[in-house]
Length: 137
Image (cartoon, rainbow, N blue to C red; front, side, top):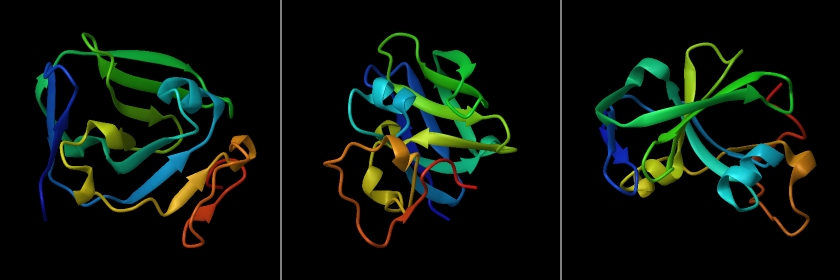
């Protein structure tokens, strides 16, 4: 099992994960579009207890997502880099932002895309990506 390491832009958040990714995904919901300033966010799903913080200058923002589920987003207090998102109802899982990894090439390629109902019309995904109009259910 490989160790994945990452953190924020300014270095105030550093973490490592010693667990295999469960899935890598893209989310096209309007919240993720606002968060990323782009058409979607990309993240890798791990059990919550897989993340070990070496430095944790984080803050969290809780809100109700488009599905009504409680969302908790964690980001660096100093530079704002997104770190992870916990979605109520997904059990003990969290989605670690792909941009937070030092070497994202070590993460699996996205195999699932959710909230396609909000996808920009110019976004084209590989046929190998499983597409869900809403969530994963």
